[in-house]
Length: 436
Image (cartoon, rainbow, N blue to C red; front, side, top):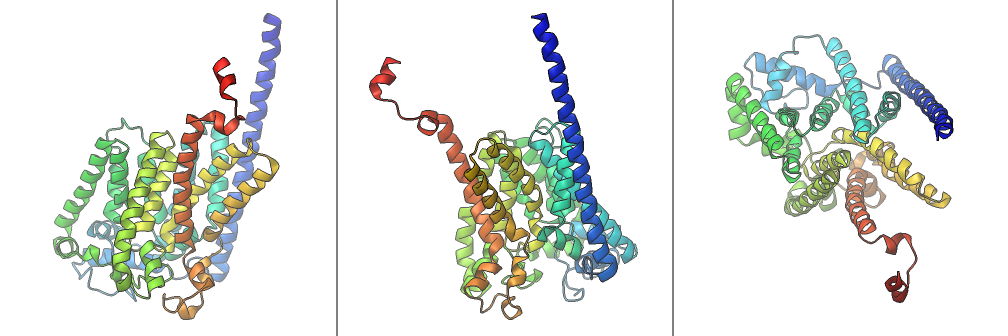
């Protein structure tokens, strides 16, 4: 026995050393991928200005902050071609940075966005069970390097949006242990800046994390109270005047950039007004189904799948989900990569090719700038037909397919667990089963 142990221990040690070395090499490759992406994007910005030309939403943030500081007409003042459409709490926050020069704000937001993307990928890798620091770093850096080329991420940075920062706040909050006293505060805080994170409150309730849901709701209400004290007039206008229900203030909801069920129906039916009754029914069905699927994944211990399914549900049912709101496609790459790696070991060669093709097909809409394939004459959502409608609604189509896949995977896993002989073994005659 001693000889066996002495022979086994060095082998295990060699295996651990080889694994550590492989993880370090993967981390180095991830760092190269990340650095190369940053270098190319930086060169585009410096030489052509194509990455951050305008950053129009950052201008809206700065102007909203200045209006809040100067007691201006926050929701009635046109800022270029846009209005300030965020909750009053966002204007309170933006007032603290509004005095900074725009050049400084640009670089601060770019740095915060890239950092948020990388940390989100780190958290996603950890939620999949990756414990080795080097391997987790490899996933975070490589994932962020690839994620920078996703259209939602690209547009978030290009427009000067805060979507990546809010995504990190939500992910970091939901990664906390359920016993954490302030779990849920991040969701409530994010909802105080943009209302769409409110979808995570019913998700927390359905996953029996009632205290966290209460903390989320309490934090959200606290943001309303703070903004009511700081900006009483705009707060009354936004909340009591039901300004938050007027989705048309954000722009043409039939515009091809609105990748939500409402936007798709508006394009299919010819106008937002015609789409409203159909959207209400469709959003109710998709919302309930999506939240139930998300909660089931969470209760099965797959929290990342639950969070991403919940985020996907919110993107689909929200009246306005611009392309840059779909930044959740970035951590979805980590989930898809983990699932692919797990299934790869259990599949034949032909099945592996099918898996790769399936993942590539679902990822393609977020990499190929599909709305840009729509002619300018129909980009506002009028007169599109055939392939133009397909290209202009690819995010929504891919999202519905992913939601269906998430639900089907739950059913498949349950059947696999409940009746393994029917799945992994040939039929056995009844008499033989009785004899056994």
